Length: 90
Image (cartoon, rainbow, N blue to C red):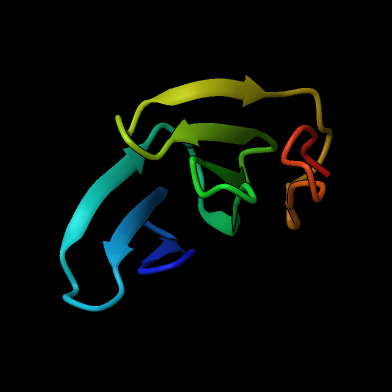
């Protein structure tokens, strides 16, 4: 998003990078299995991650902290996105 990119990994983390310099801003840790999907909200303030651990998480881009854990799936979360207003995770 803008000059920032996110990557999800089999090491169970998501990383926020500066796409121009390669600087690492944050490592988001908390999933217990691989992260297979990521998304920015439309304003670039929140990152959503989906994992093989059957949860999705929302992360604050500025602080790097997890703001919400979305549990209840009975299988892996393999796709995640925000609606156009950034109000809903879909």
